[in-house]
Image (tube, rainbow, N blue to C red; front, side, top):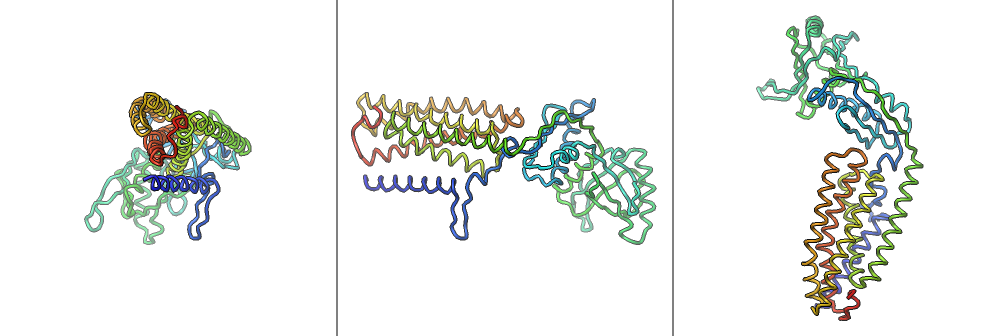
Length: 421
């Protein structure tokens, strides 16, 4: 039993060491390559540098109408940002009338600001370049279903025009329907000088209600309908705040944060070993596993790391250490009461469990509230805090207990002073 526990413990420590090394420096395994976590991790605007813009809608709309317009404005901004080639944009609605746009890595700040801030322009243009109707003439754009040639119901985009648009669209489609060349029948739907759809006219549309078909999926039809609505209901966006963050500032902040984290972790490792001896060493191993879990989870979820996020990570590390301190103090009490090491470990974990769970659950609830109602940096802080708390519970309640019981089974020493008592 002693030899088996020792071998198992050594294997776990070796695996933790190997994973830690590959996470820091990467690992080349021929066909497979493990990239360092630092290269895989998405960095936020405050770390990578880029452009931050806060826009405010100039409208008197309220309630559901305002919410709808803001979603449409967000969709248009998203399309423009995608056109800029920004890989990791953050576009969120703040409050009722504001949209926050973060563009990490953008080099031409003024161009990005100009493109984001201009008013949406939606136009229906015929093959000769004549504007048939504009976005202001579109009353409704929504996804519906219509039978295709086989009788199967398929997603389509249904449009409804206002009185002026109905008249203009009727005149244009009556003319185009008579064309014999298929290309000349096309009406191009253009948003911000980009063609988003090019349906062909098959018959005159005189009732102001048109249907766009084209073998859409539900997602494609929904996206097209949203873009058309966005052009139909343009909201003038006023630039409230603009900030250009240089990458030097971001990288300097990241380096300082990483160095501070290294120093803090080293001091924690030393303190735990000096004060708790063997349990402290186990806590250090569990803490390394905890950090690997958090960073691995953030990379897997494609979460963006920001300076507030680093603060949340450090706070959750403190919670993880605090959980181990509570557990080890309980174990010390049990040893002083005359229990054997095995009994003290089982009893100590059992008695400390409620305290650890209470502390983590209350903080977890606070993190959920921040995530639900916070925006930008606050949400980034909440994400890392929540991930860290979940990993903290896993390592403190299960991994630390498992490793400590392995060490006890190895029966290296019966000296209770080496267990902090």
